[in-house]
Length: 298
Image 1 (cartoon, rainbow, N blue to C red):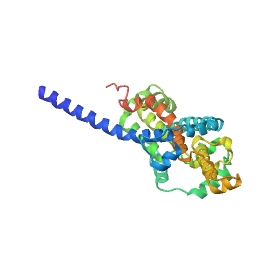
Image 2: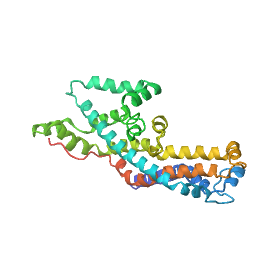
Image 3: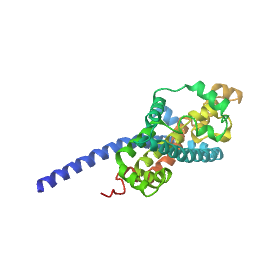
């Protein structure tokens, strides 16, 4: 018995050490980005990235502060898009997955085929752009950042369907039907509450995709008021590169403009990932919660 306890403790110690090492390796790039954002531009160009830079500077963040009104507006747009897109996506995904998980659903196989088909084939960028801009007229609207590409994905649908099928017993649904519950009531009162772990998982995946997305903004958004944080940061970077170029300097009657282009890239990365780093600790508990709540009466 004591030997088993000793072996268990050794394994736990070994696992802890390995996980700590992996965590350090995962955090090192983030730490390097943060340090680089506070490093002097000339030092970065001369010596490259370093965890112990020779000279610190806040020029990159001073530049970002001067753009604070644009950044705050883009943050609001990104928060709205991420929140609305995640809620709508999770609701549609769980609703589509529910009938696919039911064995007595007559058209389950056909629905599964159409969903799976979208994983293999798509119409392409040009037809999609024509459809959303010419027929649905969502270009330069907030819906252009929500609907295309990410609203419903086949992977998430199959993930939720498999969770429904493997973790929620049919007898529990049958008991609810005997008590007179409708399909909609079963879905909201039984399926969703018992699927919290997988719903939290797809919610995080979807929120990350929406927050980091810049493709929809690139294709469908030309008005600055609809720029999300990622699109704004890309455009700020393009502006810096233009101002630092010789052509811009000639137009301004001077040489290349002194702007912290390399450091600003790192500062933009910090600004982009900061909300995710703040929110993630509050969401991770749902990944640990893998036990289905409830019981089936025999």
